Amino acid sequence: MKKIVLAIGGSSGSIYAKVLMDRLTAIKDQWQQVGVVMSDNAKFNWKYELENEDYLNYPFNLYDKKDFMAPFASGSAKYDTMIVCPCSMGLLGRIAAGISDDLPTRAADVILKERRKLILVLRDTPYSLIHINNMKLLTEAGAIICPATPSFYSKPKSFEELAATVVDRVLDLAGFEMSSYRWSETE
Image (tube, rainbow, N blue to C red; front, side, top):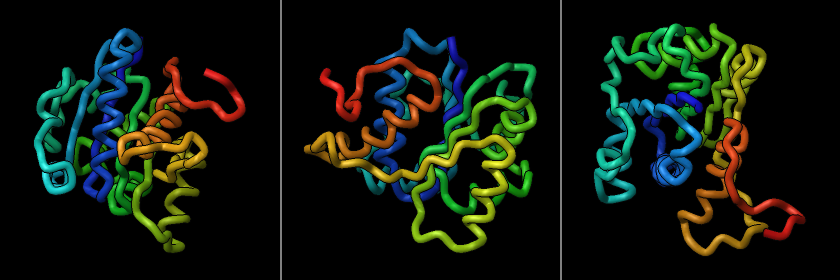
């Protein structure tokens, strides 16, 4: 049973976080704990883009971004995977620099130092050389860079289905078993 940290960063793309939370709820038999931490901008963007505050209604533990008493602020809690979705370039840069000044950056620091799985779902484009170098640095440190680049071969018919093409890939990377569109496979 997995213990997951979900950090929701402040870039646009709240639909990705929502679909990820929906999918995690649907596979609740595969995880023991999901701890969620959101930046202030993430809460603003969720309300602005999705026109609700439904992030409060999921069966996950929601932590304040300055709550260093959250279990995943320490490696001893043994959270095995952290997903940052969406991940802004500012958050990426702070993680790459090892700046642990809030719970999302501290949790990422812990995941990296413990050699556990860190998946960063980048939403901002285009990339500057600074962004690319930060991605390179984090990849060398063991993180997985997974840009929020949707695919179209499943012929998604809604924004949620389109977002799911990214989220399902993220959940695959995190090691979850689930049904999703697979290239050249019949369902």
